[in-house]
Length: 224
Image 1 (tube, rainbow, N blue to C red):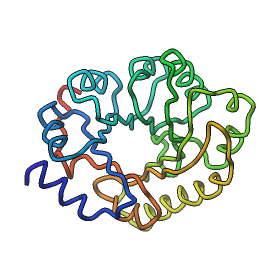
Image 2 (cartoon, rainbow, N blue to C red; image 1 turned 180 degrees about the vertical axis):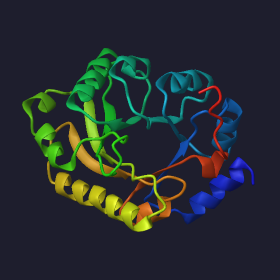
Image 3 (cartoon, rainbow, N blue to C red; image 1 turned 60 degrees about the vertical axis):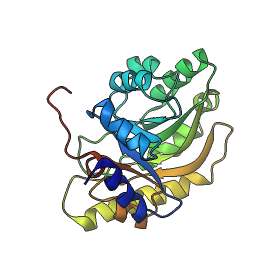
C-alpha cells in the first residue's frame, strides 16, 4: 500500500476526536510530501535538528510536533516554529522552553511526559510529582509556555494487559490533574498510542496517537 492508502486506512479507524500525528523520523522529504498531499498536516519528529531541516523545506502550514526526548541545549533550534512538544519531563526543561519562546515572542504548547512504563529506560515525571510542579511558584512565572496535556509511553511488550494498565494510569493521572486551572495550564490532550497499540490507547482515553511505521513503513536508522 502507498503512504496515501495507509493514511486513509488509519484515519478511517480513528474516532473524530482523535488527532493523528504522522511520525516521520528518519523519513525523506518525498515521503512527507506524499503524506502532506494526502491531507496530513501534523508530523512528529524525535530529533530537533532533523525536524528543523525538514521545516525549512516543507510547506509552512504543517504542525510540527517534537515527540522525542528533549535536550535543553537544543530547544533554541525549534523554538521559532514548533507547534507542540510532547516529551517535557522536568521543570528545568519547561523553564528553558519558556526562555526560548520569549525570544520569539511566542507561547509554546507542551505536554508533560508521565512515566507510566515499568522500564527504567523510559523518561517521564512520576505521576505523584506532577501536581507539585504545576502548583509551584516557579511554574506560575512561565508566561511563554502552556501545558495543554500529558503524554506517556507504555512498556515495550506483547503483554496487552500490562500496556492497558499503563494507559489507564495515564488517563487517571490526566483526570486528577485536569481540575487544576492556571493561565499557562489547561489540559485537553492525552497523547498515547503508537502503530502497534493505538486502538487500545484510544479505548483507554487517548485523543492523540503517534503513528509512524504503519504509515511510512519500516524506518531507516542507518543515517540517524
